[in-house]
Image 1 (cartoon, each protein chain N blue to C red):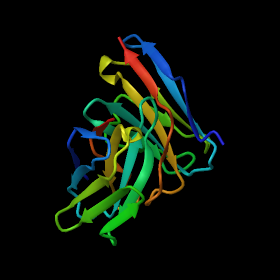
Image 2 (image 1 turned 90 degrees about the vertical axis):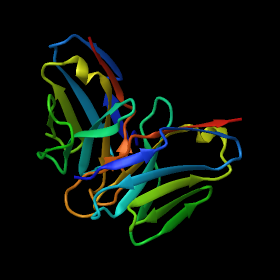
Image 3 (image 1 turned 90 degrees about the horizontal axis):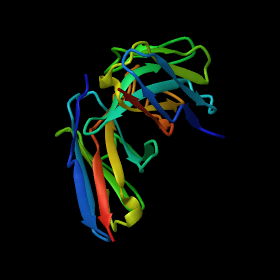
Image 4 (image 1 turned 180 degrees about the vertical axis):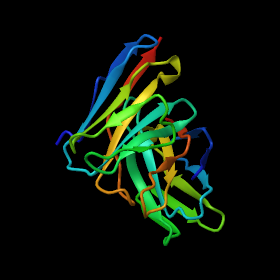
Length: 113
Length: 113
């Protein structure tokens, strides 16, 4: 089955700096890679996703890059704000068939004002 | 729309007791999932359902049972709770299995003494 590793487990940045979270996956058949944000006391919420036919995707201050050859993908947050403080999860799956998502272990991002 | 709701929000059990966690969604989603979240281990899939009357095992199914008698409800049962089942449980639903956003509930914090 799929195995997703996520680094770092915690990340502290100053407001306005950039933050990068990296994930690797094991199953070369995986082709759908979403990122979820979990605020304190809430369930995770999808913030961006990417499919394997695309190398990069941007949505305002967040972007995701994918390297299928190396089997890794990354989340980039620019101009970080205190409200970006949360736990971020990457995930991967094969986008066909009946397999469910496999999540990474999460990164706790703290943006210092 | 309420989205995905979970009851109860908190529960304390003694070892050996049983309980059922209820998940309800009002988005007419076919797919529903139960995850557990433990520190440093991210979200791990317990069981999922691809439609009314169907269930499938996830990554960590032992000690849990599920039922999907109605499309909008997905129940997670613990027949004989153990301290190792102390966790935060999240229910999620999605419109389809392939490449679709999962919508999460607010979680149930369960402590087994």
